[in-house]
Length: 261
Image 1 (spheres, rainbow, N blue to C red):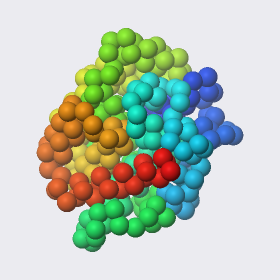
Image 2: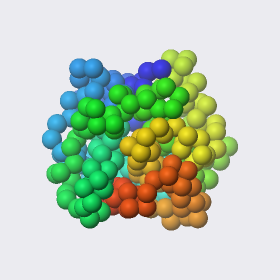
Image 3: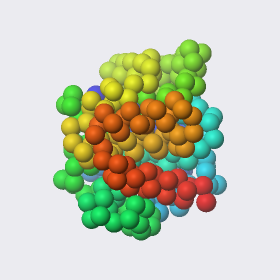
Image 4: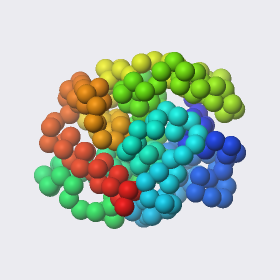
């Protein structure tokens, strides 16, 4: 399964040609990680997360409008920040945020300590957080599990009714994906939000941290009972320690706040 094609299909805006960078100019496929294409499909994102945030025009929602990802996220206030971050940095954003929170937790630092400048744009190889190095419980690239987590979390508030799901499926048909990639997205969109199925994908605490960050970044402020219950169940089923969750939440809120600024 080509994770890069799936990500490109999710991130591209309506009317945008495949291979066109949402930030302007042209780019190769994201190669399953995010950012500009590079050797091994890992991209060439440099510097820190603040460098990615700085590229988002117009603050919150600067990149979130249009396309499949926007249909999945819905119009709820607060979700556009996550969409903008994902379009600007791909899965690299999720990995970097989870990695920084996990490292701070291990060092027993205060949740949210530091700034975006201290969050790397790409996680180190061998860190346990790399979406194309790590495999989920099904043996797929962890990036596949992160896409599943994002879509499931986006559906947790129930905004995707049958009509919206049909619109999304129609757009998937127009993406020019291969049969395997199209079938994967169609299947994930058709399923209801299911924290248990997402939790089962994690094989390590590091992977569980990334799946939580993917879910939390998409949901934004868990201000409905359904969203809060979804995240609470995900945390419980993945056995994430409460103090680690506090670090993950603090980092997610920090990057979302930076986009909104």
